Image (tube, rainbow, N blue to C red):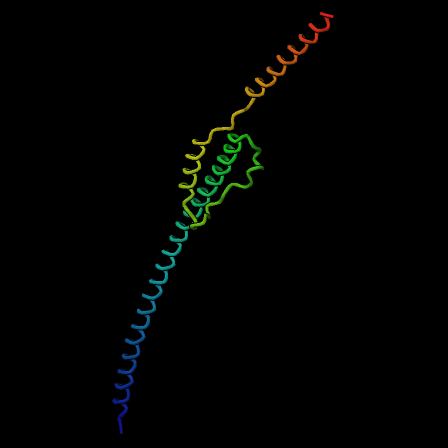
Length: 150
């Protein structure tokens, strides 16, 4: 049988082993806690930069939409039609899928530069009215000449 001193020595060895194992566990826990805190800080930084990117993208969408409406009104003015007659401005989702809005707006600007407003036909109408007035005057002169010659 073991003596009391052997049991105390064995208990001391087990206690030392437990303390060493507990210190290792505590060190592992502390390192995991520090890594988690660092990950949370990085996630918060990414969230802040994502919020800034979202705000910039929303601003770009607003600017693009405003420019699209302005160009649509300009097209209606150049074609001399009411804005409602053209319908809604086209969206970026074409038959080939979405295209970058800046490229679409550039294409619209180029097409607007090529559009010539419809010409008014006042000149032609004036010529027709003038010809009719001359004919009426000639007819009136003919009638007056016939009446006076009797």
